[in-house]
Image (spheres, one colour):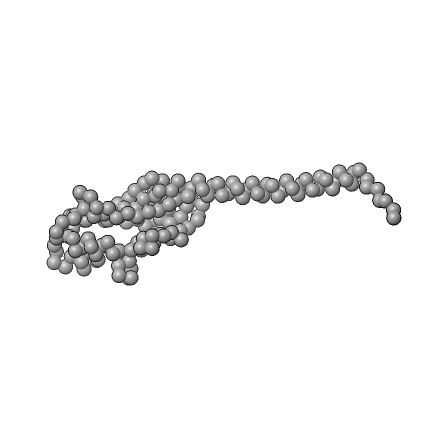
Length: 165
């Protein structure tokens, strides 16, 4: 058997190629880590809470994430059917005019941005004996909200399922 001699310049070239490939792999890995860090730095976390206090019953949206929460759409569902407006729903529930509309506050959330730590009142109604039935029905509402981060990652919040997908 003959021994083949490896030229020093060939060996240096092979080592340089191996090191170059290794450097490319490490660079790709670091870029992946940086991308994950960027996503974590702007991650929004939407939450809806039912509140009972001196002002009555309310539903409040809040962004508990570290980045802004871009709300693209919100659907309010009552008994499995989307409602077109709170006013129509309240007219159905308030047929006997037991409450005046001055006791109600309504805010829309579609196409808005919540900065981190921000809260927004969606709905509030005074709580008393004449409104208790209406409040009990309003607590049955489900909210489905599609929101995004500034990096165009999208989530769907479903209040009744208490989950984000």
